[in-house]
Length: 126
Figure 1 (cartoon, rainbow, N blue to C red):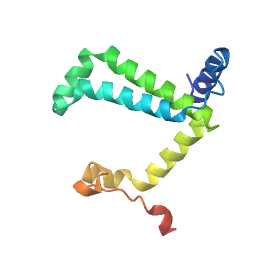
Figure 2: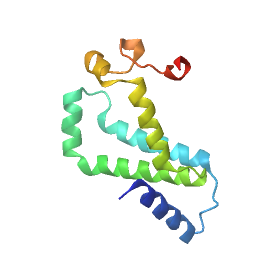
Figure 3: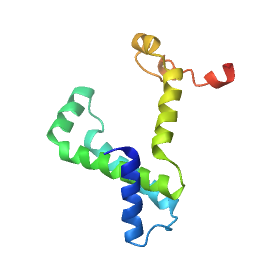
């Protein structure tokens, strides 16, 4: 399913239930936090290899997390009248500039505090 199609389906879902004008961004944001917390409880305090094992063994739980979180993000997008596909494209374009592949392959991550690379201020360099 394309992002735009998913966003429209969620809009239709909300309209059918009388929720289209239910502006409660705070509760939706808190619900996303709750979903992240549930996912975190699957993988917290274990190393990378064990995390991979847990996800392989609890694939349905991981899939539910992704689906629930995407649903909530697209619902938020609808309420704020934001095209999620354009938002994602803009973010990907920005990340391409901030984290070039040739640099990232050398440093491995974007956490500057841990020795990574993130040219977050690329816009001010134009």
